Length: 253
Image (cartoon, rainbow, N blue to C red; front, side, top):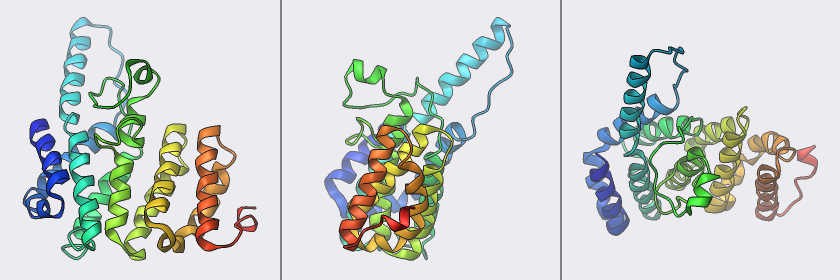
């Protein structure tokens, strides 16, 4: 599976829109892979502590199996991101195919992955040095895209999906998923959420401003968050003001 999606990612990047019919033929596999990732990363529960050696070995084997199953997620995300970017350039017809069902299926899973709990031992490709990797969580890499812009990540894929969707009706549920992440109790999830929102605003621009009023209450809260999160929230405000040609100060009070 890992080899298949790695090769598919390379083909998707090289062939662009020509590759879309090929992706259609394996769309059920795409959704299956995303479902596996969601089941393993978004529904994790703590196992009861058992001191027996046999139980520890079983849990270790289970964890190793899970990591092997999740390994193909990153090249799949890269494949999907490249295909969605190509489709956005062509007008987004592929993404909106089957009466928007294709879009909704992909969004449903990507939105959940924003809230993932990614084990530190998850095998990932990145541009990070060993020292940088030691201080960067697996979540930051596979979800936020820290050091993985060329290797596949959730935020990059969601941004490409938004660009391909191309209309307010389809942006609304995507925006809801992003704002849900922005209001999450985990700091890294909030950071991924506001980073995703900023990425979407930068990519789509003025057309996305129709959804800005829904975003402002959450952005206002994140302006009081940690330094990095607040900086991205401020940039969302700055870009919003630039695109609208008016101050948003009163709306943020």
